[in-house]
Each structure stands twice: as C-alpha cells, then as structure tokens.
Length: 105
Image 1 (cartoon, rainbow, N blue to C red):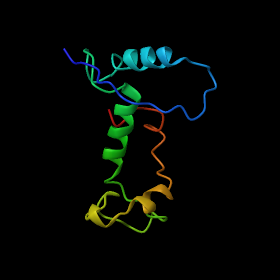
Image 2: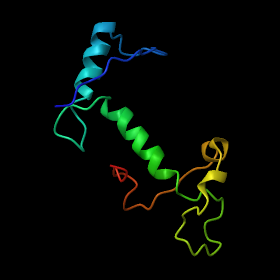
Image 3: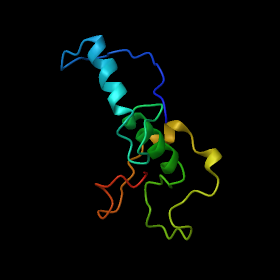
Image 4: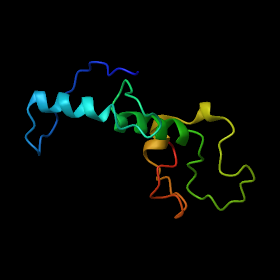
C-alpha cells in the first residue's frame, strides 16, 4: 500500500479558514483520491495531476499559428529548445472533445 509523505505547505491566501490540522487532513485524504491507483499515493492527487499534465503537454507545439501545415501532428520534434517562458506565455487550445476531460491521466 502506498504511503503519504510529509510535506511543508505555505498558505498564500486562505479563503476557507482551515487550521493547520485541517490542511494536513485534507492533503492526507487527497492522497487517496488518485484516478490511476486504488491505493494511497505519496502526493495529493491534484499535485500528481498537475505533474502529469505538465509532462504530457511538453511535447505539444505552442506555435501561435498552428494552421501552417505542420505535418508532425502538432508535436515538437526537439523539445530541448522550448523554454519555460515560451510555454507560460502561450495558450494550449485543446479539441472540444477532450477540453473538459482529464486527458493526461
């Protein structure tokens, strides 16, 4: 069975008013809600999903004009040349069929 790892969290803005114990309890329970595993995982599911989405999206082409006849299916052949700044400033538009799905899981 998986085990949750202790982590250090910094609350930047607290709209709900959780105590530190409630934050710990929430993160513990989120370690049991991962769609890929029926057991506990070591990190909360939203953190894991963010990692999976970032890892999967690194291969997408973030070109401004995707209609220029790219014959490689929108994938970047050399991902080493894509910087974090390039990715942060571009919007990745997904097909409407998968836009509301967790395609990265």
